[in-house]
Image 1 (cartoon, rainbow, N blue to C red):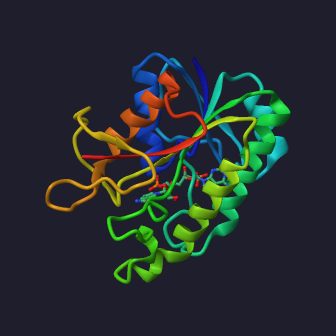
Image 2: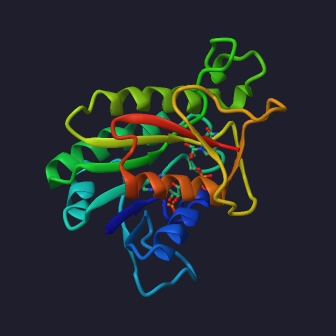
Length: 214
Ligand SMILES: NC(=O)c1ccc[n+]([C@@H]2O[C@H](COP(=O)([O-])OP(=O)(O)OC[C@H]3O[C@@H](n4cnc5c(N)ncnc54)[C@H](OP(=O)(O)O)[C@@H]3O)[C@@H](O)[C@H]2O)c1
């Protein structure tokens, strides 16, 4: 497929770019500066774009089979609803304008439910620093859910996403936090990218949120 990838310069977006390219997909990586440093590949094109600008999204998306977004606030942007909800709104508008229907986006883990019935972000131990962006991610999920004409999938990481091996061995859940037998919810960047690209290729969770964890 020919994929437009927003957030290609990010920690997680770089892993997704590598996974897409390794599986043979032609990938257009978008960053605000139009630069991906030393990342080069015969199937990779790098362009500049702002994911919160629906017209710009439409202009880039039009020649692609699907759009992937790994966009999020940069470190230090601890209250950045504009990027998170703005991206959701502009991606939906932009895809509609472009006539592209498939969208797979990174989400947050904060809106997943725990065994207590609470959302992760409502747990008293949830870090205060992350709360505003987690709330914005929950709001963005609502924006995607309202887009019933598009084939979106919102892929929440585990509670913890970290460096680690690409094992290909993980579990996929829905709206509930997935934990291991010790109660931990974790995934590596590389395995998160595997799960996201699996979903892009298989279309098994269209108009749903999924989560990925060990
Ligand atoms: N457990 C969790 O819930 C969890 C954990 C980690 C991450 N996340 C989510 O995943 C997101 C990505 O994480 P990360 O660690 O990969 O972040 P990151 O390294 O900071 O990367 C952010 C990416 O978003 C891009 N971006 C930001 N604003 C943009 C805009 N207006 N237009 C186009 N691109 C824009 C950046 O591109 P530039 O090069 O142009 O700056 C960069 O590629 C987080 O922000 C968060 O929403 C969730």
